[in-house]
Structure formats: C-alpha cells, structure tokens
Image (cartoon, rainbow, N blue to C red):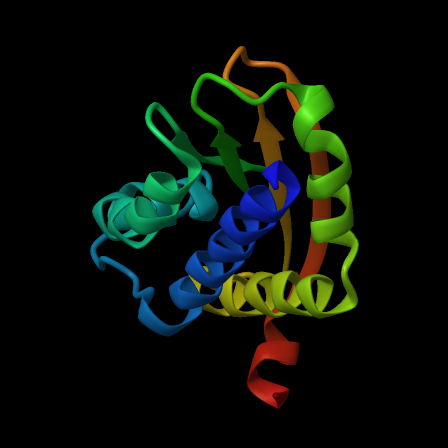
Length: 151
C-alpha cells in the first residue's frame, strides 16, 4: 500500500515538473551574467512554488521543495515530510525515476528549461530526501535548447 501511495505522489511530482514547461516565463529585467539559472529561479520563484504546491500536499505534511542553481544546472530538491524513511522510499523512487516515460519527461523538461533560461545545454537534477534529511536518490537529465524547439 505504501508503495502505491508513494508511486502516486511521485507521479504527481513528474506532472508538476512537466507543468512548468507550459507555464514558465522569464521575469524580465534580470542581470543573467553571473548565473542565468539562478536569475531564472529568482525571477520565477513564486511561480515555481505555486506549480509545486499540489505536489507538496500529496507528499504529506511538512514536505518541501527547493530550487537551486549550479553551473548550467537546475536542481529540484524534494524533501518528504516526517514519516517515510530512505528504506521505505528508495525502491519506489528508483523505479519511478528509471521508467522510460519519466526519463523522457525529465529530458524534455531539461530541454524546455534550457530554452527558457537561454542556455544551449542544461543539466536538470532531481534529488529526493526523506524527512530526516537523508538522501534517497539523485538523478540528472541533460537538456539542449535546440531539442526543445525541434519537438
């Protein structure tokens, strides 16, 4: 039962992420010379939080999402609320992120974000932590702005 609930919650996370490709826009007026990914996050934080709200609710009380920038990298950090542990979540999270359809969706999201941010390439990293702050797993997906326009 727990695996089914967790799978549904993780599926919601994927849909939330995919929704970003339809709603994201540059906030405008940003100096992107230092880190364009961070500028995108800063300009769109309210929208990113809004898009993530339903997913966070599905993860249970206390769940959080954060967005961080690396060098050419957009990082989603999902943290479950108290309760499930790494042992409870590792298998279902791994199988969810390894599903071919989900891999394709995250690659498409990486492509779209690269185009929105104005980068030729972008690495999209998705990390999941349990409520105690222990890493469950991390996966990275490569995106290319030219792929987003070709689809």
